[in-house]
Amino acid sequence: MKILVALTYYRPHTSGLTIYAERLAKALVARGHTVTVLTSQYDRALPRREVMDGVRVVRVPVLARVSKGVLQPTLGLEATRQILAHDVVHLHLPQFDAAGLALRGRLFRRPAVITYHCDVLLPPGWFNRVANTVVHFMDHLAATFAHQVVTYTQDYADHSPFLRRYRHKLTTILPPVELPPASPEEVAALRQRFNPENRRPVIGMAARLAAEKGVEVLLDALPQVLERFPDALVWYAGPYENVLGEEAYRERVLPRARALEAQGHWRFLGLLSPAEMAAYYPNLDVLVLPSLNSTESFGLVQIEAMMNGVPVVASNLPGVRQPVRMTGMGEIAEVGDADSLARALIRVLSNPEAYRGDPEAVRRQFHPSRTAAAYEALFETLLARTRPSFSADD
Image (cartoon, rainbow, N blue to C red):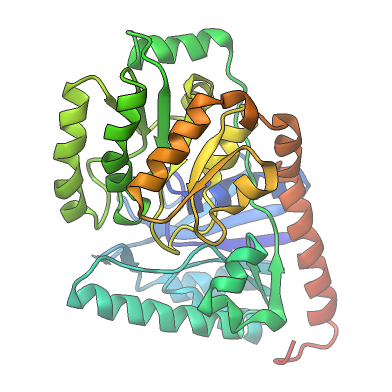
């Protein structure tokens, strides 16, 4: 099968969406399929075409950037060429350009499948309100044209106003999660690099420094945690200085984190490679996901932590709370409530053995090959339905 994957950003850009797309693309290649990723050349230093881990990547030049989006005048021409050369179109929303690609899938009798990762909620401001409205409208057009819509969990689908409109074409598929193995030496080396004092407990947070991630909630919760655990240390892994569209948020929260850093209770680790992330989790006593809104629909880092036997404290958000509910490996804190987060962290850190769960079962359930097999079955069903007698009502 020839599969075209389309999304605005792909590797080396790092986000939960790009990591998902990369893992799935590689797993589909491993199952014998031909996979092409159609994406933006968001950085002019990136090659227009290359092969990454068996996945062919085609990047379309960017004329201008609008907030977190990009303008690609030649995307339509390239998309037409690529869709005609493939059997299936797989789109990742939110994506402003997805409607045009999904429509081409209809016109050219290529099944178009959307994976809906999360809602779009841009920071306050009149321009972002307009951008949010436009992207929301285009995403609805894409979902209307698409043959099938995929989401991570039924919990998120049941609470998403967007997804509830497409119940008749909705499928749930758990996301792909894997990490390379880390040796004890690699784990110890990362600890020596970022925690030479061997402070304990270590509270991990792995995310972009972005408004929806709730960093300020963790900052507000830490004084209570430090009263109980005076040597506690936060390891913040992820981009924190040049995150697109998050300049105002960075200026608001970074000084508070820097003050804790000066006191020895916070470390910015920066963007870690997959191998470094594999060594990151075994150094943690708990991972925290204090997300604030529906732009977070699951939190892949929760599964990465659980695969390493590390419990999680997550926000009580649809989808985000599901990993803890499924595994029992953690606690759920109320959204935006620093007291609730502090109490949950203290419960986990005070009795870690109660939250160990079954890491091997988690690893099997979320292995990329299992996710790829589910998509493969979906693609084959749609191909059988679409190619012999195509109908716009499929």
